[in-house]
Length: 131
Image (cartoon, rainbow, N blue to C red; front, side):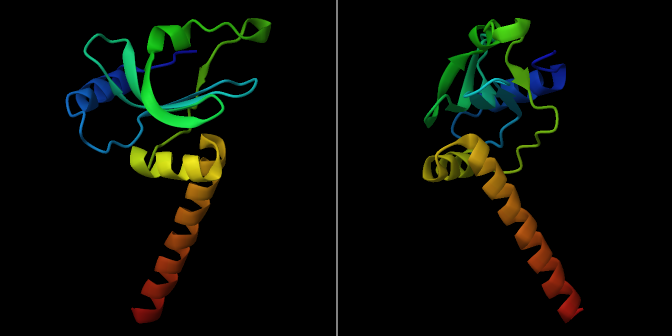
């Protein structure tokens, strides 16, 4: 599996040039066999050092090496995978706060998207009532 497309790499590098911004995660990596989720927002000029939210038991903002992530050997010849359906949608600060409060990125993802879906339904209900 391709862990990083050319478009994602370009966006991560562009985000890396603005380190003080509250970026939306560009890509989500995960361990298909257990703990381990990484939301990457930035890539350093070295092409290897990523920044974002990592959760291997406790969610925290920080940096990791992409090559190290890519080289992890899991059971059955598998490795870390990229979530092909991930869209980010929220700034990394929102992800970090939700993951810390709830306990994991995976659980925070469910809560964030459920809340966003509920808000969009309420918003469309309100719009139709006042139109």
